Amino acid sequence: MIFGYCRVSSLDQNLDRQIDAIKNCGIDERLIYCDKYTGTTLFRPQLDKLLQILHEEDGLIVTSLDRLARSAKDLFDLMDLFEKRKIVFKSLKENIDLSTPTGKLILGVFAVLNEFQRSIIIENAKEGIRAAKERGKVFGRPFKLSSFDYEGLLQQIEKGKSVDEMAKEFKVCRKTIYNYLRLKK
Image 1 (cartoon, rainbow, N blue to C red):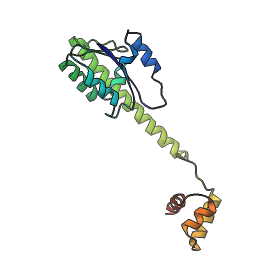
Image 2: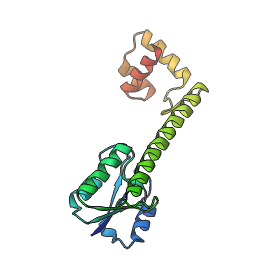
Image 3: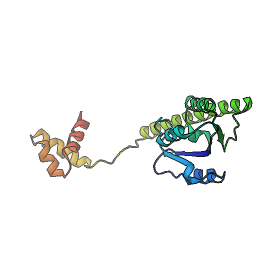
């Protein structure tokens, strides 16, 4: 039997493009397993389920290597498992044939390049966030209290009002008041 595997990195992403590509290879949709988890985690329940089902000489099709694994080590481990269990693997995008030494070499090159590309994306995102913070961009939820309210809060606390009283007055929870008090330090 030939199975398909699809994965997207978050719940709001769509699997349709991958499912359609695998169905176009003649795979019944009931034989396509899909996960909505980041590739950086090893928690991929549908892939784990599929790996339990695959038998010798079964096939597995993915649209791209990066949909199966995000790290070179994870990909090599899976390819080693497929080779030991004599599972035929095919990646549509990279058009890799693992039955040849050249196919194995190309797999290694693509795996390392995919991991390099991912690390570059992460590094660029971190640099962008750092630059935005340096320009004064504030990340996270907006403050519930204005700076005027914050000053009033501090004055009332210094005068001896309790956190419960301040939470009621500003119509926020106690945790919000404690968070604001922590900003003072």
